[in-house]
Amino acid sequence: MPSAILNPYEKVLYKSESLEGNSMYNKENVFYKILKSEIPAKIIYENDVALAFYDIRPLKKIHALIITKNLYSNFDDFAASASPQEVKDFFMTVSKVAEMLGISQTGYRLLSNNGPNSGQEVEHFHMHLLGGEKL
Ligand code: AMP
Image 1: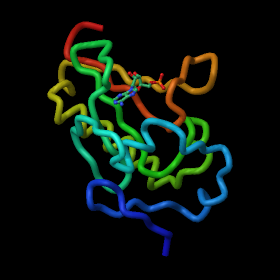
Image 2: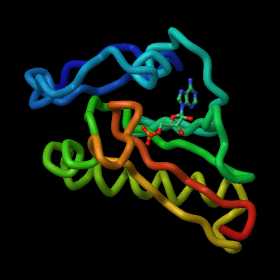
Image 3: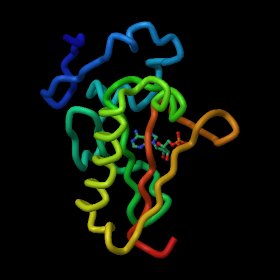
Image 4: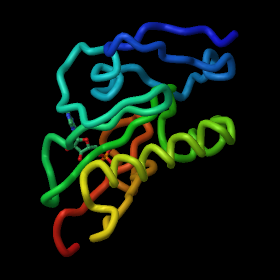
């Protein structure tokens, strides 16, 4: 059984054993606080693997963020540490959120900043989902 802690939305947040010792992850980040319900967010959708909410400083008409519920610092960490099932479920969730926001047909852009040169501001793995207009 994976260890579990309650997430802010009354669902169980699973934390894999392998992540227990992940010293790369720094809990002093705003998305961790959103997961813990310590600060609010405009939630779009959530399931066991991901939480989607609107970016506080939208760059396009639609700008959503999809974050993992497990604790990964960035894309590299996610790619290295997540199970194949979690990777699949996460990207299926991204696709579902695009559908929910009505931009699947019109098109959208996915982006993930990884590391210092990318300008990654928040050290919790997330995808930006941009659309709703010509990009
Ligand atoms: P990145 O530069 O890829 O780490 O992107 C972080 C994103 O998080 C930026 O687009 C910010 O506007 C967004 N952001 C920061 N704080 C919040 C917050 N409290 N709620 C929603 N989005 C946020």
